[in-house]
Length: 296
Image 1 (cartoon, helix red, strand yellow):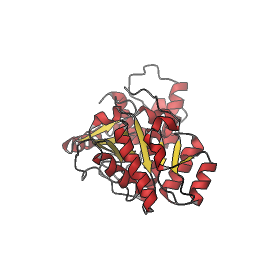
Image 2: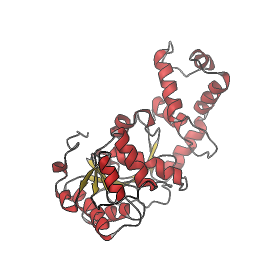
Image 3: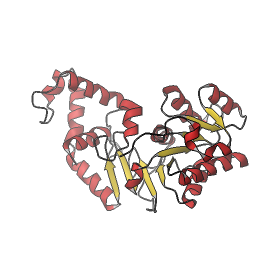
Image 4: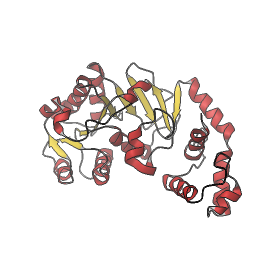
């Protein structure tokens, strides 16, 4: 890893210590802003306590930042454990890190993504599938059709591996010969490597599931694709509602949802989503939105 990659990992990841308190997105943004405003005389050297005090930090916060940056042995241990399990560490300055996340999320991008599987899938154009866990038959058909059409049209499918819409889309995509990016809310150690599948985890490759992790990973799913397809949504509650309303609020990615006449669908369409039927999925380009982003 380069020095910049190590810096991101040390400052933003809990690594193998569940008690570690990495910097939050606002704290990282503040550090970067202060360093840009008052760059050190020799940019290549390590930060010192004096540098941080000069940047306006108090003694306690300066010591916290230095403590995070000093834990090189913990970082090496964590990276070694990851390598043993076939897991890679991606930071925002690592080649292959999804540029969409930096571009759309600003300083709320994941400081570290842990990746297991086929890294080449990150180079493909992508669409995302989200939706409720308990699906009505027509909504399940829509989710599966998203997966099939992603495979047929040459898009990787991004989803979250939850019961219901996620898995219906994922299974249909793989069955049709497509590729998956699965953004999990749990760990990667028990994920079996599969052909045409890449697993991503933000907070740690060995962390257990939590509802907060599930909500946080939704922004990654919504930002990685050129389009987001919503198979079904409950009004005012749940991860699908939370992720989709935030997407519409911040304008991350065009949203297309199955127009099932539900209260949630009506409200999401009024907020900027586009209601469509399953038949409209046969040509993603015809739906509008971003379809010509260049991946390299």
